[in-house]
Each structure stands twice: as structure tokens, then as C-alpha cells.
Length: 114
Ligand code: AMP
Image (spheres, rainbow, N blue to C red):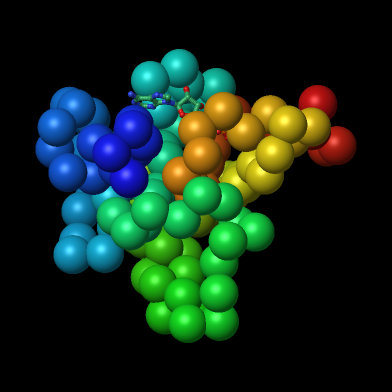
């Protein structure tokens, strides 16, 4: 999508602090980190949010979660714990309308989230 910032990051038109890249996904550090480790994992294909995932995206979704596992292991968060979240819509505070999973770790977290 031409006016989507994450599509531009995926295409390399806007720089990012990349952690992991495959043919299907990109993971990069959040520009406004909310934890010592705050990585965004996105599909390169434009999908607006979790509500726009289809059954045909099952393989892609599995790859995004495998990417999250890999990044968690790289940062040794598999032992200490981490949070993996995606926001949909206004009340959740979604600000970029390209599906992304926030992987947050490196500090204790509260529940429920604010
Ligand atoms: P959300 O509010 O769930 O839509 O999350 C969007 C996230 O994207 C926020 O945490 C922003 O800090 C992050 N973000 C926005 N622009 C960039 C960028 N150019 N590079 C890295 N992260 C970004």
C-alpha cells in the first residue's frame, strides 16, 4: 500500500533497525520502545490488522509466530518471559494500520495492561 509506513519499511524505503528478515516478514525495533526489548514483527504483505487475516494466511501467521520465537530466543526472553500483542482499532490504540505483533520483554509486566 503506497501510503503505509510499514509497507515502506518492508520495502526498504524508510530505514529501520532490523532484527530479522525473510521473504515473508520483517522484524525491527520499535522507534518508541516500551520495554528494554520492543520489536515489531510484520508481514511484508499489507494486512491492515488481525481482523483482516484470512484462513489462507495461516502459513504466514505461523511464520510470524516462528519469527517471534526466534527473536525471543536471541534475546534470552524464552527463559525470563515476554509479551506478544497486536492491537486492533481505536480502543486498543492501534496507530499503524499494517498488522504487527509487539514483542516486549526485559522487564516485569503488569496484568491487566492499561
Ligand atoms: P500500534 O499502536 O499497536 O499500532 O503500534 C505501532 C507502533 O509502531 C508504535 O509502538 C510506534 O512506536 C511504532 N512505530 C511507528 N513508526 C515507526 C517507525 N518508523 N519505526 C519503528 N517503529 C515505529
